[in-house]
Amino acid sequence: VVSGFVITNVLLRERASKNNVSIPGFYTRRIRRILPAATVVLIVTVFATYHWLSFIAAAAAADDAKYVAAFVGNFHFASVGTQYFTAHQPPSTLQQFWSLAVEEQFYLVWPILFLLLSLPRRPFSPVTRLTVTLILIIGFSLVWCIIETNQNTVWAFFSPLTRAWELALGGLLAVLGPRLRGRAPRTGLTLASTGVVTILLSTWLYSSTTLWPGTAVIAPVLATGAVIAGGSLRGPDSFGRFVRFTPIQWMGNISYSLYLVHWPIIAIATQYAISPLPLHSEIELVALSIGLSTGLYYAIENPIRKSTWLSSRRLVTFVFGAALIGCSFAAIYWHLSHS
Image (cartoon, rainbow, N blue to C red; front, top):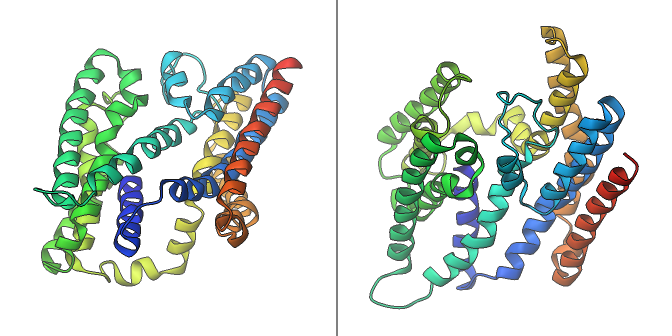
């Protein structure tokens, strides 16, 4: 939901300021934002899996990495029948990349569709066309999510078709945001507070036995949308001191690197230990994840994302992205040839 909201806002701002959307410019920003840190984590995870786990697990991770590097990791994980925490075999040390693959597939489709829907043609305005299209995507995708969950929970979990409505909801909130902004501060506060409470209740009440995503996903997804919509209704200073609190901003800054890093650390440590980890070890893993993601953010993610040299050279950025993908495949096949 947040990704759909952020990306659609980026497209809306560019269209408002330049009266156009540059598709090559969009993709060069995504390359600088996503690929450098992801490539480092992918390669290091394959190395770490070889070092700490069995050759069988390492060969499987290297095979998984081929699909992750090609941005189709979610289809691969669905095809081999993996699920978080519930599979008979330990989950892949690269399995966190499934959701990044869904977002990347969203990036391939949504900017082009946005550009077509934003063309200044009659009888309907671009906002109307975007709104209707997003509502249709939400409806069809949610219905398919519920149907697919009852037929095949693994594909329902990993499929971009069942997840599209979550991204589309964020996009819809971005499109409608200017019409909501500052309209009803009290209502916005109630809506946002209800959303936060619902998200917390979902983390408490849902368990590994919850049929997922299905209808269960509706509550946390709509709650996230409620937080965003509540912020729009309250106005530009909707969360006040909370979002200006330095640790909150810092955690938000490193969140992408933390997303990449946390899962392989937990998965490798858990599989290496065999028996359940004690609480102090879990706390140490959390601290290690935060520490390594902080280093990844300041050393690689942020400098490359904000590189003015790369941002002014689109062709070089595309070549750079292709080189990163090439490095991933080179490391993968080196490992597979030596396993």
